[in-house]
Image (cartoon, rainbow, N blue to C red):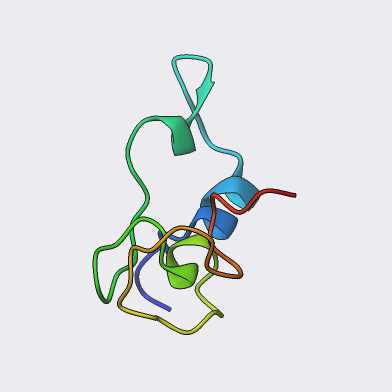
Length: 65
């Protein structure tokens, strides 16, 4: 892959820091296909894009654990 993945999972695993804070807190992570923050693909590039921003989708980055 020539480009860095921007999903929440890959960003978290890279554990990059900027000014002492995790980079993942520097910007909103959105799906590369549809641009929605609650799309499961925004959380993990292995998930399918749902083209939806509806809360409560399985696999989204805001899912309660």
